[in-house]
Length: 343
Ligand SMILES: NC(=O)C1=CN([C@@H]2O[C@H](COP(=O)(O)OP(=O)(O)OC[C@H]3O[C@@H](n4cnc5c(N)ncnc54)[C@H](O)[C@@H]3O)[C@@H](O)[C@H]2O)C=CC1
Ligand SMILES: O=C(CO)COP(=O)(O)O
Image (cartoon, rainbow, N blue to C red; front, side):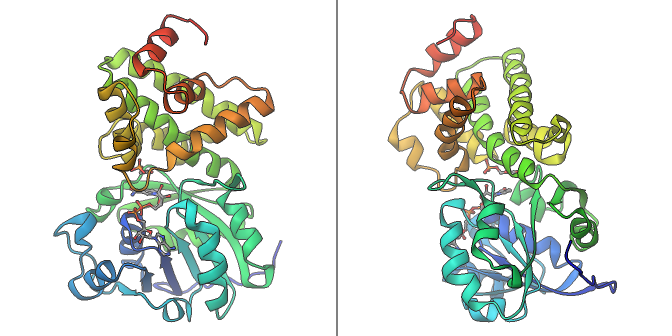
């Protein structure tokens, strides 16, 4: 374990830098700044950044909702990172490694903690994002890698809806010590050392939310949706066990809670894309291209292949694969599943 002196003073004198000015980066920065004085967002979209900095809004995602005036925003990565103690990354996972390598590391001035907020994989090398941080940031600049995850629609966070997260780190002492900086009147934290399991849960719940959306879009009722929900929990258990974790970690906010949230609401982009596929009873390019950040679609093939490689049976990923990659009609796939016909 590293020898770390945590600061005990509060409001914190930690400097927080959020990489990514999209929906989630803005929402997390906005609750952090109610507890911590120095929070800055870095983004590449001039309009978003100017909106946050000058109008205290991020109109693109949150219409007229006011953000905290103390929140700073910049397109200058050097400025964003000059004092950073805690770096939170909220960009879609396909850009993750590139941004760490080309933008973050070269501009860091001192070691920092890293908190992954994204819910995806490195799709090229098929690795979890905590591992990508470990690979890209040398130990001397990396105080610890954490993951913040849980049922948390960005829009509801800026509306100050009570929200519970898990903050995970291999070294639980780090998570326990940093927890207080993330807790506000409306955000609560539990900690865990099962960071890889939490990464896995946050990836698979997105794909399972797509399937729940498909079932909903096809017009199945609540019994059938609850059927798929229950099966989803079984698949979550199998996957976390595969990585050597106790299956009970599915009861942390990143598991059942996040699946409940994203698998039941059109506020979720993953559920919504599934719903559209179900409604159209086919996958077409127009549907797929109409959504920007849909992490769950990319993960389907990877989890499907992983299951084959590891010799575990994941019925639901099989269904998702048949629908999205083999282009079999969703109604046919689901009908056969419910009738117990194995394809
Ligand atoms: N929106 C939500 O409610 C939640 C999203 N997440 C996760 O957070 C991650 C980001 O999602 P959102 O914020 O919703 O996506 P978004 O699509 O709203 O925003 C993504 C942001 O990343 C920025 N970006 C893209 N490439 C970049 C680069 N190379 N350098 C700097 N910025 C870059 C874009 O300009 C955009 O501002 C995803 O993995 C998602 O699963 C997690 C929890 C909740
Ligand atoms: O992960 C989320 C909430 O916890 C957001 O889900 P979507 O990416 O499906 O909108």
